[in-house]
Length: 326
Image (cartoon, rainbow, N blue to C red; front, side, top):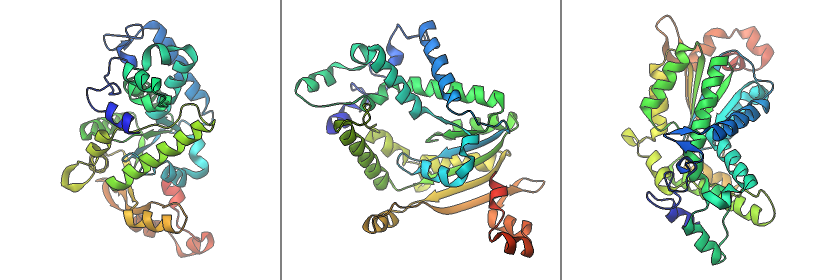
């Protein structure tokens, strides 16, 4: 892991703009655009992603799922959507990283192009590497694919989940404007953890996948998130992470955002869960709903209180949160 950590630093062999990155291959990319042969691959990968989600509905609903690496976004999404998850197309650049690396393995370009000399030298010394440790070399291309899928999905009115770190506030606001112009109802969900917990989870996730690959599991291994990138994500204004600041700005500035939530896992909760042999569950720290003619964000609990009647609440045994969510 230390080798990957060092080689992922700016200017090194596994940096996103390194010489063997896919977007630096002239057979695949020219002047920032994919070549015809590469475009055919993109078309196929995009179609495969759509085919894997046959039950997606066209209701123009979007969930922007933000947060640092290792925050537990997938866990929160499963909790929020539950049985409705299949009705949403999840747009995640990390899934395209897996697809691109699998394709590279299959067509031989992983060994012929992607693997840099620095890795080959260490492999010659019997150090073992797996494709997802080279995921940074497909970072730009996977981002391109995710943006293409997002563009097509918005044009079709698909229900979508945009799974992203969301570390850039201007990009977040531009996304909000685009969804608003397309007539979407938007929910912003930000999932936060402290830096040290993020780093621990990144390491643990990588170690688990690496060990599984050694034992004959997933041949792609585990993905490593460069420490410099992970650290930078937490260097936001006012002691907040960049995703937290960007998600809040998106929620406050975009009229299309009907609900905004922040989930947190503290280091103390994570340690307690570990000692008890259970997984730490993110806690809902902020829950706001946009209401009224002025489209003001107010606490969701107050909205639920207004919409709930005693008889209905007693009959259901819960609030109408499901209605608010879906």
